[in-house]
Picture 1 (tube, rainbow, N blue to C red):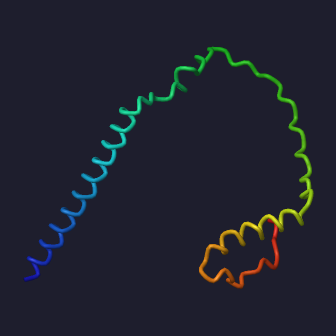
Picture 2 (picture 1 turned 90 degrees about the horizontal axis):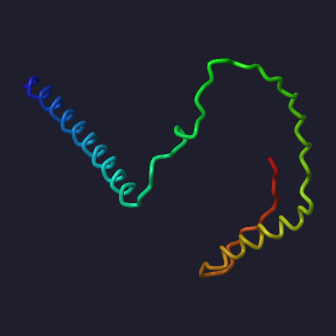
Picture 3 (picture 1 turned 180 degrees about the horizontal axis):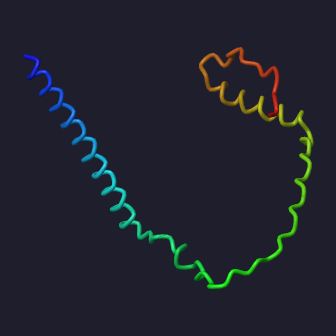
Length: 109
């Protein structure tokens, strides 16, 4: 009986792998047909690259400028009002109209 269990396991694994790979091949074919039907061409990035030169020329690189300091939001009150209004618009579509949801705090990361 143990031989039939092993054979059943191997058969099930083989059938499962076959179905998965045939599904992937079918999916690749469908995507290829969709690309062909839409008329999309392959990217021409390889054709637009210049040919590498035989000489390497070192060019000096200017030091990078320090990043600009982050600007604080101009009006965080307006942002809080906009978020609250958006939440109200979404929650107003419910049957009761009163969900009890209140924005208590907005954190910036």
